[in-house]
Length: 394
Image (cartoon, rainbow, N blue to C red; front, side, top):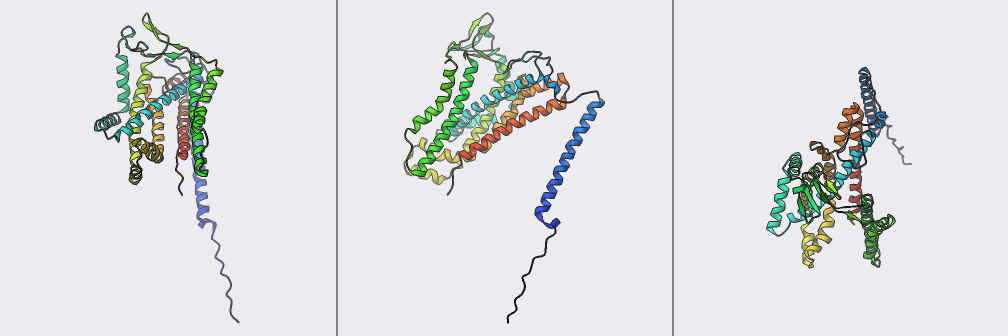
């Protein structure tokens, strides 16, 4: 009769030797230490403020602010609340960042492609731009543009472009739609339509790849999806079509819209500086495409435009999107440099509110949270776009 050995049971591992248990314990202790540190900091700050007879809290946001703002995205008058002043700062920062991001992206993408041009002059000029703007301090560029616009002649001797656009030491005066709010909403609907059209194009391409049969009238539907939201908004608003053209009367212009030198300085300073970095990101992304892909495209006779559109750009986007989002975040944070030329952005208005209210900790905390939310929103949007441009592998 054969002897059957009993099963050997592994000895029980004590909890303190289990790596998973140890990891949970150490992370829990770290969180508790951080919470205790935060409580200690808050308690210490409140005690220090109480000893100096200073109050704390966010109630001051509803107090009237005894200062004026030179340029406000929202309506603001002296006597409005500190909350309204901070809202103006957020609006100015968001609007400045948005137009700067668009301008920097357009210029940067164009320069990135120009860097790879077969024309030596075009490639050389693009390289000179990148080297000049990327290696010059951004604050120096902002001050340069501010000095440039403030040294222009007065409105009576202003520089004119076709009698519609005027540049003077008061800023840049341009024609503007009479229904400005409707115009901004329509632009927002155009942006929404562009996103919807891209999603529809991706869905149609996925259907074609899966079934081998394309949908009918795909291009027409894409154009309709892109234009219909903006067109419906414009028609629902009464289809305003009037434009206000600036006209010189006395010592200043009447009508149109005037972009102040402070706004122009920070706008050009941010756009041209970040465009140089975006150009290198685009160039690096295009160069990262495998040479075999390019040789295969040339072998089947693709034109240079189709080579970029169908082969290089779709593959380069996976490399371009992450560092591009980092540059957008950098642009939003660098908008705080507008304080150097007196532009009332979030940083500048927060400093003023801090001085008048004396609520240092509260104002700095609010400002930090707002910048954090803006940058995290950019990062989240970049992650969504990055997932959309990913090429599924087999």
